[in-house]
Length: 316
Image (cartoon, rainbow, N blue to C red):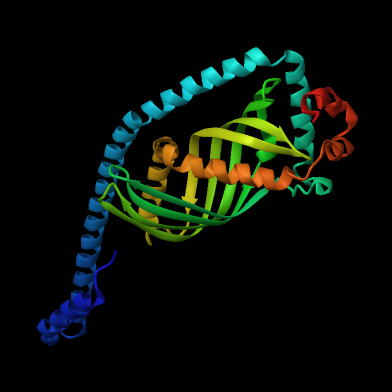
């Protein structure tokens, strides 16, 4: 956002011609007047764009607050039904055992489990993540994230973990107090059909109170695999900083605040569109990793004490 240099040159020429008889002081005075005019123009344009962004943000926020209630209520109801089903079929003893099993896996996250072909998961690295939002109220926005690194995943808290004898079915609800993420981003599109978005560079983000719910029907054939895999997630808030965003430091600060306010709500709105793809990706990655792992492999790595209670469940 700048005044075209051709306009500045023309105005300077006019000032020089009209001030020719005044000598150097007149020329300098003309340049100063042009500079002041350009500064006033830019300041006014910047302020108007900021006000426009805030109006768009307020409108989008009001829409999103209303829109998230339907999917959120559906999720709450489905979670209650599923939790009730799992609770009725699982024993408290199994819950304690599965918690110990998960904690054992947590301790290995920074190093991975090479014996089982599981790479290090702390930090967790993603090559690329593509996000596309096409919503009549939010806008049309394309985001590409690359070289993503996620930290603190091993600090998760197990809120609930159930292994049902029916299926067998595994369900868990975990939370991570704070995730730190960094990487590269490229964003383009229009916010609220009004504000053009553009930027590419590095990003940093702190994600607070990330909640993850998973429910899977397990299968066993020469190893373990996921017959079905369902998941959901949410986050309470996010602090995000996008470098080189909007080609303007002040606008970048404003838009980073916009993203901080709207991102958790936008996720709830677009989740029905993006969640199936995420579930498919995560489920396939898990199956790629574990499909050749046998019960003997797991016992050899994690120890017989943590596993032997489950052998009657997974016997084939």
